[in-house]
Length: 115
Image 1 (cartoon, rainbow, N blue to C red):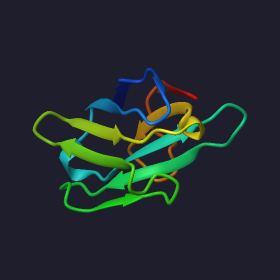
Image 2: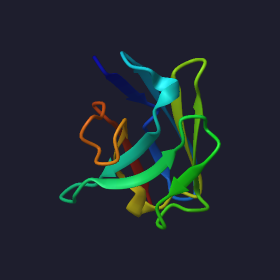
Image 3: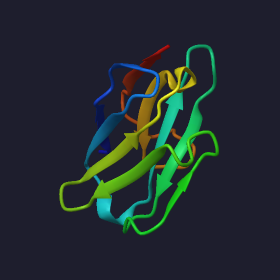
Image 4: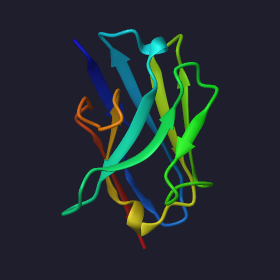
């Protein structure tokens, strides 16, 4: 059974940084591309970043490109999202997911960016 647990969310001021983590279990983590999604209050689930199973290629949404960096440690079954230069519009619940639709995701971690 796929199990994903996100952590690292917090309240931070605009311009600050956070690093989110996702602990994965119950599947072959090293063989799956992984994704980060986010959902702001009253808005739809938004894809943020994707990383190839080997960690060699990444893709980012235009809204976060140059500010966020996805990475992974296959030896530890961990996925990360380094978020820099945070903006108030980055406020959302952040989820890691195994699929490009975000259907198989964890419980999420709250990121709040204050002005």
